[in-house]
Image 1 (spheres, helix red, strand yellow):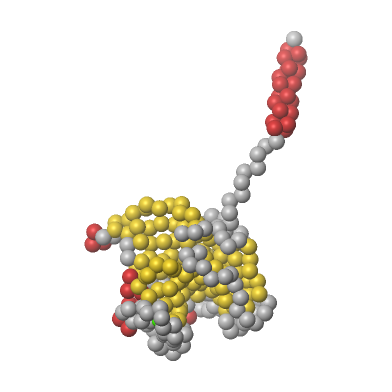
Image 2 (cartoon, protein in one colour):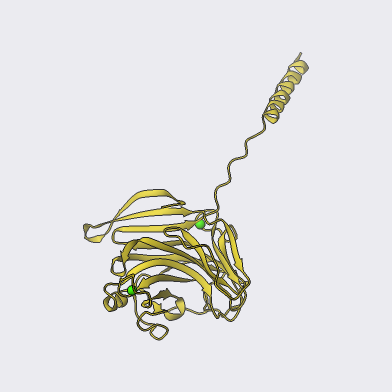
Length: 270
Ligand SMILES: [Ca+2]
Ligand SMILES: [Ca+2]
């Protein structure tokens, strides 16, 4: 996986039924910096497989890895914008993953109290899906979206703290060309699998906005997706700064100062 460094592979968890889950964490440090687009047309990083991209940014939206709201290390995927802005972080898979193979789907999110959007808004988590699994037909694609508003939850959402939400088994609503798009809000992942047994997962994303009624400032981190017995968590981090070497002359000066002090003490004893 280009640009993605595996740091913690090999943590094998035994699950019920004697099947094993292979859980790994990927530290994501690119793309670096924040992408902002004041214009009304979607903009973002050029398409690429198997690396996180800043996408669908418009109307003053911003998205990028920063240390604004650190989580599980020094950073997270920050996303912010005024009313009606949009900004996403997306990962497209080159591998052929089926919706029926999804075994984990969760993330951490943060909403700052400086946000003025209605209290139920928080970064959404989505699966990008092709309904029939046939990539030569694209009109049957859309997102399965997790939002607290369509699940038993308390509004307003918590602010100024990191929240972990498990979307595996939660209600997911659909967009685009998926069946029931923008009209059915109570189907969970297993309902969708029954409805679309051949569906393929083309990617995963998290994001804010599109028609929100106020500003938003927050972040996501630890986006987790499992296919079969392989579960991957993406931890967004600032690239670790290289340690600053101590100048040699300073070290020598310090040594000389110490030895001079020792000499002074020696002389006072005499
Ligand atoms: Ca298709
Ligand atoms: Ca992080």
